[in-house]
Length: 60
Image (cartoon, rainbow, N blue to C red):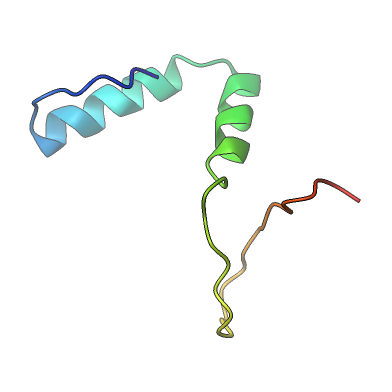
């Protein structure tokens, strides 16, 4: 996805991002999904939501 700064409305931005995402292959979409977990911090407070977390040290 393009990392350049653009000046557009929220609606234009959302439409562009959706087009770019849908243009990816299914495997690229899944890879993007997994990469989206990087940089998120785990909260210590209990929650009732179902949360998928990626381990920092990989899969065991």
